[in-house]
Length: 139
Image (cartoon, rainbow, N blue to C red; front, side, top):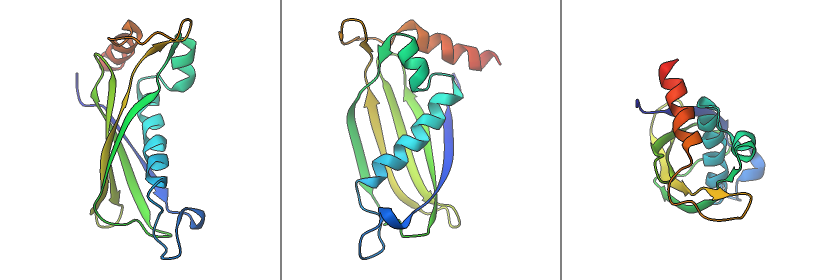
């Protein structure tokens, strides 16, 4: 399967920065989420489709490495890439300055499938994930 990724552009808004005009560290998770939704839409398995398939996918792990601060008004590219899908959804992220390409932040999240009918953790990804990914590979 080819590497699947999606990139979104975010302008750092005033309400996300502190008194030094630096984006507060917790907002980077929000930027990751925006890119993650774009990635999930690439293979037609965004949150509404997840719910309709009978599975919930909570984030169980989030890792960030801050390299350089994002500043108020700065335009950043946030790329989400699917790293693993067989037993979990592991998605890698990179935030870069859109003008210079300089890396600002990198990280990853891990999501596990939970059967919505009984809240049981699934130790392998449901078949719907593979079928969605195979469908885009054939397209």
